[in-house]
Image (cartoon, rainbow, N blue to C red):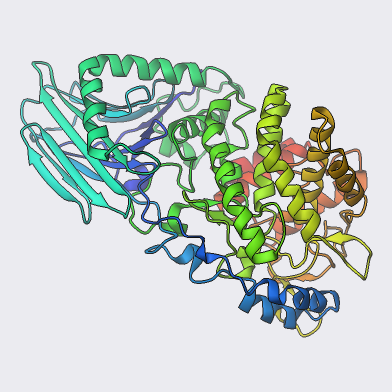
Length: 604
């Protein structure tokens, strides 16, 4: 690995410039201050909510047939009004960030007051394949690591004989003792954090760990003391060596090279990003950095959330939760491709969780068997509808998660994963076999009511902005992929031949993708006028990526996919980072290297 370091020539001015370290359970952001060091801390399960099945709305089912009738009659505005009232959760749902749904939160901030120093030849680096940050100036090299094996963050401060260490977190009871700081809080899960520090002849060493009562019977502070005792007995150098071995092995499983220009050797990373055109090594660094971030945020009880594991806030954007209408899937798109299957385990655990709670949702909301999940979830398996059908009525989100089980099988050829997840795969199919209905206008089986994630169209009836229809392209593509995967699984495992027959029959009745008036892939059941032609989501192209429904084997649809992207970009699409990343994957599938590269530069 050549490009394996992020390098900066000044301390971080704010949190976004700090260097991220992590082991999947603990996260640490290193600012690299000179006279005062600041490290912001995270623990994966520091969430403010609790389990609450009462978000499922029992009134949804009472109005389901009426909504369908209105949609099939083309009375979209009337259908929208009903959906706004009844195709929603009970209560605040995901917006209840101070209540049951909750929010991911910071584990607090550690400040180290150090002797005044003059910083000559300052550098701040994140060494990806060693899992270590370094801050160097005036001949001194500070080191920062987060050990996976010992679940401990550790800091080495050479030449420091005295320092003031303090910890801050809202609503935490903090106790300072001799060489240690302990803190407790209730979220309402119990949270504990422990800091221990010691002075040796060569340096000051600081050890940090944190724990909560989430899914464990052990008291969090007792767990912290046990963890740090073990880590300090091993010693800093052992933690450092084993952390290096861990990251070197994980990152060494894959690699890319786009050529060597050498033009940016020694240039700080932030300055390289400003002019990436003649810097092919920057793309290699980005590839390595992406893998590093997933390794650092997905090896504990919970998967990487919207911010990985790093969060400085108590009320972060979108609760830093698990959006399952593309975002968590995007976090894990490349895990199998770069040979990091271990990182999938927390995501698989989340799928198991939402499949269980989704049984209640399917039964109470839709009176259907099996299980269903909508657009987002939390550590307690929230699966109810959202507060607004614009985003919250996306009924195929759980099935989208299951394509990662399919990916695991395709990369491993291990039928064990199919047997393990078979009840969940079957449950998803049972739900859609019950939920799908026949569109009287076409005779096709469609999911209705349905939405295309976060996007809207103009009602041909009265010009209103509408988000509810029947048989969206993404729903159909996901269900087609699920049914095909399930039928293949049943055949391989010689299971449920009767159900497999029902699935095969339903597959033949699903509508095909079609081309609209602009030559684009149609997003909804009709070729509606788009309210936002440059919308950030491109859900109608699920079949192009991540699935493989749209291929060069069907030239007309393949060409329609190209025109869909061109139209979105012409109207300002791809303006968010994740959306731009999706576009790059689209162009890669379209075998259009020039546009993939152009959008990669835009992403930088």
